[in-house]
Length: 149
Image 1 (cartoon, rainbow, N blue to C red):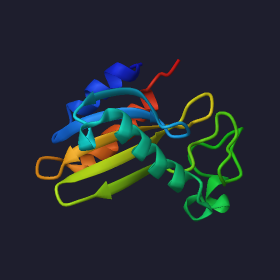
Image 2 (cartoon, rainbow, N blue to C red):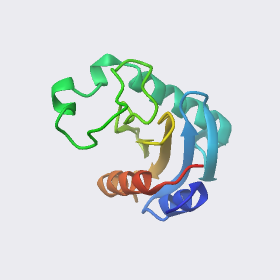
Image 3 (tube, one colour):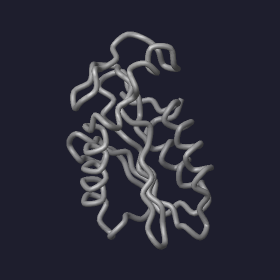
Image 4 (spheres, one colour):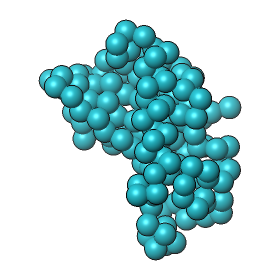
């Protein structure tokens, strides 16, 4: 099971990867980062990614449908009731965010943890070389294997 560094290095092997970071979206702190940073500043990029993640996570419109949660994947104890707060060990409120601009993609993949699920993987991809579908699938796999502790 990979730790933060191994996970980020694996993300950088994706076609078109320019940079990757693991970000605590409640504080804006980068727990690890590799490669380039959007705007050239890893700390500023982490804060901005955290702000976007927090905005999506706290919106009721983006929460899973309660009827779908009951019988879907990831069923279990400790699920939150939507909104900003979620229970310890709860699934992240959003699976991922994809932001595109003229020359790149930003993929924020929320990571389920044994504590508060308040971290996300941020991958910055060059649009010309990147494969958004592959990146989304691989980030999901990485998030599932990531060991924090």
